[in-house]
Length: 267
Image (tube, rainbow, N blue to C red; front, side, top):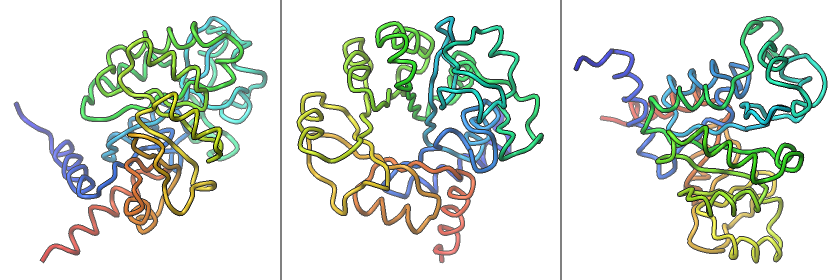
């Protein structure tokens, strides 16, 4: 089978990044250059050589999962109201173009359903996929219906799917349903959080750089994930501190920097 020059280039970038001890995660796709949580941004992140993708999920009034971060439509679409109060017919006519940041550059780019994103990612079996059901939809509709629909719509990704959330009950339910990897996002590093982590036994614990301690605690047999870092020196520092997964908002810049570093260090 012939391999395109573009695919060879992408694989070369991935190979260089594998020399880090950590894996680079495209946070919400490629939000430094494209509207977050959109097919166009996710596809661009994959083209840039992302080893892993992270995105958020909210549900419509019909219970359909969409790749969307906020509980309101305002910031990304320019429309108003809570996403979970609008039906599919309304949401599917909206443009996910983040007008405040990108103006009209991505006008015409539609809000993406979870099923459409899953179809795209099914073509990239080497890429890990972190799916974050948002607390707003989980609280509005309930854990079971939201998680059942998310797990069903992403069944094709089950081998490399990670469910990531602040909502520990959603993670516990995902585990009960056979999800092979769960990642709990921490609000803090309190004694209560440690106890809950030891009960939940997530595969990955995730923290913001804003609250991350200087030394990672040992709370169980888990890996650590941090968000976000866009500078290669900082990413290398985080890798040395023990973070296995590092999220970035500028996946193209990071992957190019990794490749350039390797080229300049090769005799």
